[in-house]
Length: 357
Image (cartoon, rainbow, N blue to C red; front, side, top):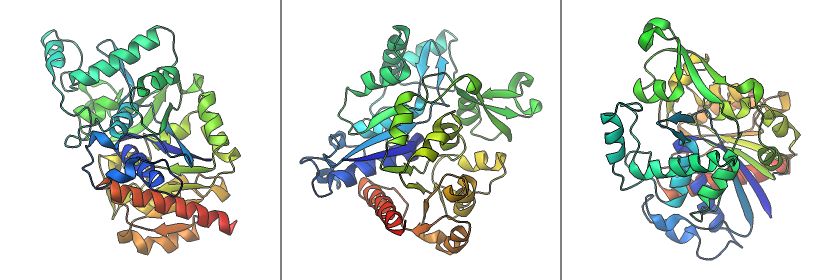
């Protein structure tokens, strides 16, 4: 059985994982009744949730830097976005939260002056946060709590938070730009309230010095047959995962080929405001620049291979010259079928890289 590990965060990671699951279910030897039969359905269909095929296991190592405590509950945005997407429960229109949400509880909290008035949680979403908080208060780790919560749906993917510790990403800005003269704020405030409009000077993971990746994450990476880097934010999603002590060491120790998918198409971000994050660390918003930011594994970096979109085909020779084998393919994940084809291309590229070795 092939073991596939995907470094993921946010909407890009969620859609890529959904496509990967669909591709595997459509492959020879896959379990019957999987998502391949539903490829023509809208992305929001709840029928897409299905077990993984017998030929492969998929483990998502998920960013937790966006996590936070708010209104007494522990919120894990990336874990939840991926879970809802794989379960067919996500709101495809908004791009976050549960489908068919109401917001009565958030309205009540605002009336009491509790929480962030600009950060609205849906009632069903609050149910997830309450469940997670109850499990954590009972002494379970975040990994254990995630396993319990995700067991509600047949996701076909194992979700692993990269660490069980609270390592939250904060954004350093100019004091004059921040409310109350603060020079730092939680990433969610910068992202959601300010829409990344405040120029970021740096991203800091609080608590990083006293944490490590979980044993489950280390084992999954070291023992993987394939490692894929989803088209997630290179700075605050993938960058945070790689910044957790133990992750890079595990990646270096793994014999698995590592192939990444560019989150940049035609010099623009696919979704969100990753360009503001890249600018803050001095990386241009371009597919070749992100590849060089990750670096060639042969030179101590991350990648054995890199996928870029057809509109960026002219960048391929330069990326190859920097030591990163590159393949050109359609990267837009506008529906499950296209996402599945992209995942299949990534796996084909892995086989090609193995043949070259």
